[in-house]
Image (tube, one colour):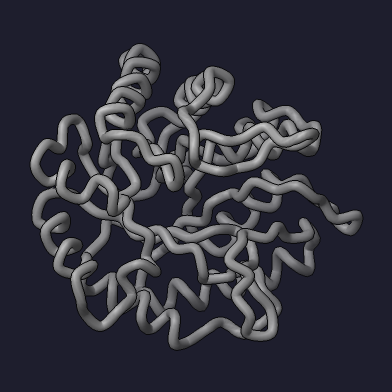
Length: 283
């Protein structure tokens, strides 16, 4: 499998972490090998207070990207103009390298379910999502990244595979992709498809960022929990992603059972070690 080339112009940031309160002080004092940080947008979409004071400190030290969980790009509800205005205001303050959210819906009739719900992969849903992505990008004045989510159910109405749907959204809306390697692995297990088929179906020209994370084994399903170390099969899938897409900004998410920063720095080093020979070959 030959490495494809990228046609978009956003920067390559290297290897980063999701910014979490547990590591605020340590990251500022001993950042180690962290080259950039991803912030959860909603944590800082506020008029003032301590979170923004901390954010300014990190903005001085690291490149930042913004990652949202409440845009609800696939919802049947109208887009939340107030939310988008606050998001745009935060972007003006942070000047992020890019802004991302999830290819999902998170609520209906004004109720936020605080979960990332999957979509039916139909032409109707595709047209709906593409229109909304275009409108969001018009408001923000930039292309956004959409992330694939882990899922535990599928819709009988689906006419496309998940990767066909994601690739079509990116192409028709002219947006980019945040490819979550763990989510591919989790959903592949839960739905019985090949994760390599997924990778093969996503155009490298659209992939701007990778997520890596851990998950939990349920009775029958894998659950995307971000509360454990990355397992070997996910690392192996990351290698295959690097082989296909080349140099892509990579970060590790940990949202629960958060370990000392040193453990996450070791995982970042492992990602570098796995990717290095493939990137040298492609150079």
